[in-house]
Image (tube, rainbow, N blue to C red):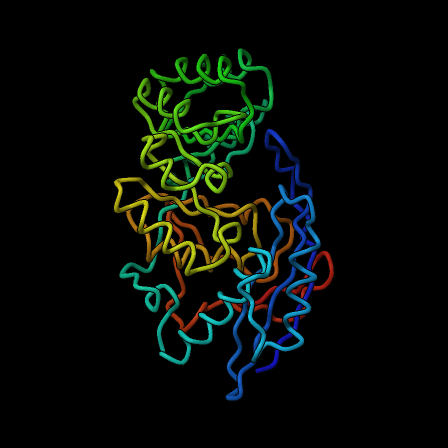
Length: 341
């Protein structure tokens, strides 16, 4: 087995604004595995913006690539483990002659996705109308960026053609979160992610009981723990990022445990490359084929490592080729890489 790590830097068309971070580009590296038969497997290592040490996963992946046949990777940073497991699964699915989504247990070659609408700014109504015209049924908006009263007023003034997911990224203290969420009860809200700056199972459960829509946990899940979330009925939904959880096996195990307890599962990325999105979409098709996932972010990138999977009427089509089904044409080591399918 040979391995190489190919760095990339992908500029965004416009800033990706959240409560705690603003992205103007996406940096990461592709893992390229070549087995003894010449088959090629690919994985994406894109350190999460919330990381205090964003270079650690890339350095760990590069060190592992020096000895891929024998080196254990289970103690590496989560994003590096995700890249390695994806590339290995890509190879395994190719050997089996199956698309990765089918190799992972999926039965449907597509997943529904929500429109990634960005923040509550002056251009949001135009983005919302474009998404509706393209057939999306659910749109996701970043909140917790402007004052609470301003965001409530903007949301109430929207002419919303579909249901909304709101993501606060732990922006609010308890009183502000409660005020915002109660103001949303009569709007077409499907879910609100991470409303509390300092969440506990009890505080989340108290909010969830007041609301007709789901509260969702994302970045606070590792600290709270799945058992405590289930026992406390803290939320109805989990938003899982395989790169944060450390790969396919860890994500699948957590998803199945949560689903057994009656929780909904949505998979998502953070404006990842086309390869990262494709891998997450194929896992989503296997784990939760009946929900919309947060994977329609490729249109935010001004350049990508490969052409993104097509989205039509709010559904992302998965490749029917063996393995991941997506390959870069050339080393994407500059800001604007060559594109190929």
